[in-house]
Length: 301
Image (cartoon, rainbow, N blue to C red; front, top):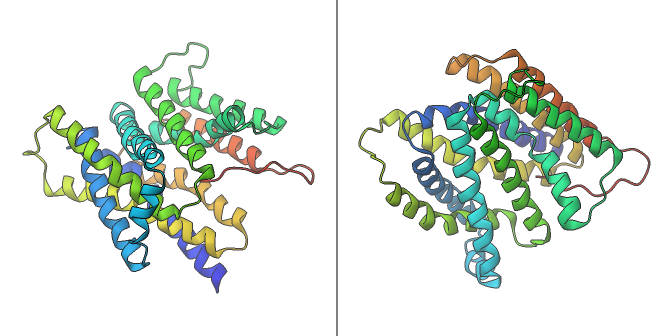
């Protein structure tokens, strides 16, 4: 029964994450990246507050934060604040299919950063995975013009890659965090919200033109990219006795996302985007293969 529930939660999370690239583009048609961050973070904080209330964890919020306030301040400034501003800007500059595929290389970035900051050993297969994944990034970014290195939007590509650095940094900082994960994520949003509001006020962009469709789209992003889906995924991993089977479900997400982008918003999916994404996924699969009996402990999302 637990395995069936775990699979249901995992599939629900993957399907919801598959829709967010489309939701990002719909939202960015009316919001600036900073406006989008502000509203989506507010919605996400409300959703996670509700989850914590249902689970009886609200009392953990003040004691968890006060146990290490500077640590949680740093986490909140990295994610959601810096990470999502940069990611949303990358989506603003690039086709969503390219931005989400490049962002998907974060797991490879995490391996390299974990070796540098945590002293974890890089295996031979990790180097192979890096070659596959970053070759995939180049194929996507140059639309196949690998030798010419002609980037359609160098800034968009740079921001998408920077988002992988921030996301990997966030999870490296979380490796020694023993607090409840949902409470920790909620604290990040609560810390980031005042800074996001300040940035939105400083930016001074108009809110008058935003339609009900825009408000619905940004609320969806806050609920299902930055909030509830994280709870579903954690629940799936907690219930299952086969973590690998649940974790491997995530490989379907970018391909489902491409189908949704093409059918819902009519985005043209360049053939090299699919080729590059296949290379990135191949790199992630190679990275997960266990050779021999002793495999180093991996950091997972």
